[in-house]
Amino acid sequence: MKLKIIYLTAIFIAIYFNATGQKYSNEFLNIGAGSRALSMGNSVLASSSDIYSGYWNPSGLLLLSNNINLGVMHSSYFGGLAKYDFGAVAIKNTDSSAFGISVLRFGVDDIPNTLDLVDANGNFDFSKLRSFSVADYAFLFSYARKFNRPTNITWGANVKIIRRIVGEFASAWGFGFDIAAQYKYRSILLGLTLRDATSTFTAWSYNTETFSEAFLNTGNEIPQNGFEITRPRLMAGIAYEYKFNDKFSLLSEINADITFDGKRNTLIKSSFASIDPHTGIEFSYQKKFFIRTGIFNIQKAYNERNSYTLNVQPTIGAGIRHKTFSIDYAFTDIGNASAALYSHVISVSFGLDRK
Figure (tube, rainbow, N blue to C red):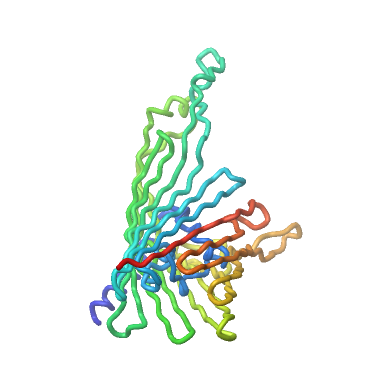
């Protein structure tokens, strides 16, 4: 017990002293995964029990119904300019342990490279027009295990490797880990995830030979190799499931993302921490048909009268489950509800039992 207290104390000390990193480093890891979560305003931390638990709360992998589970998701953002793909596989080898691997990619492809388009005489040479991609990758290696006592508490962890590529111009490698837990008491579910527990470090290197001449001619500063630090983020959630009868049930969940990098444009903020609450509900019929909705990205904004208004981003979705096959749909986006284009997100999961 003393070792657990020392370990937890060390984690929170790391949170406090890592307040000098970049505020919005590796933000692509905060988009979400799975149409169920996206349609509930990313509020699934306590109730996560599917293949996408490796992203939200790896301890939820122990709640999988099958031994082997597969899941994929695809979505497009910003009018189809950016593509977001997610795939995962999880194996529940015993009732007390499970592990999984998740891979996600967020990228923009076919970007024109016009650095060599104009020659020294000012003529356009379209034969030298090339294209490149900007892509962010993350590889999550998840493990979940159940406590011997009490048996209604599960814990999990992620080891993650980050790869970021900007064409032939720059690239980066990153490393970090998450820890998480879930607790169930009757119809009440609790979830906790500490993402980037001791900060995630990303090392950037630049191939300056590919752009230094153009940068010097246009007066741009040539970037230097360096590090990005993604600070810890504490995510907490509570859910309650109410059963009307044997067929109909309603699950409601409230989550809060707590960051420790100063004030952000969140509903609750201070110089020490900012709290971003979001919520979602899921109505189900026989655990086969689902209707979901939620709100997140709650922010205060100035209007034309120079007064504050409260902006919220709504989400909605549905799902169908037949035996071990599930398909889910979400109507959402990742930006401001009044400016960014909404997106259609579809995710599919499948499970099977091995002998």
